[in-house]
Image 1: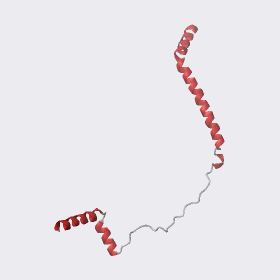
Image 2: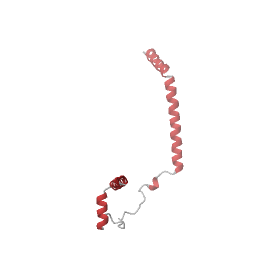
Image 3: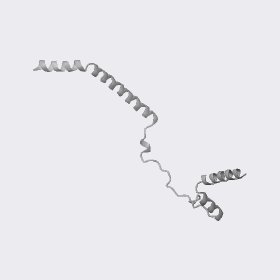
Image 4: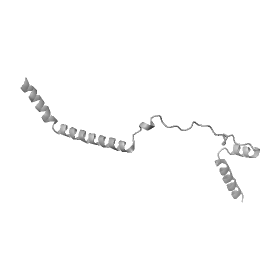
Length: 104
């Protein structure tokens, strides 16, 4: 019987100590103190929503799509010119050197 009593006391102490701030929460509960918090009914007044100053100058979705197409076309042309330059860079360099030699 004493073993059961000791075991139950150990379990009770473990459960009581696992709660955060046990002594403080028990004393607050018994004394009737209220938790200090902000007033949930206090509403701060905020400025009303306004339209941005350049709202009329924002692009429409069709203008955005056209701009994206132009950018993609430019990127394709740029990619083509880069690949052409890289494949013929040695020959074009040689040709430019030969032209400069011939001119002198």
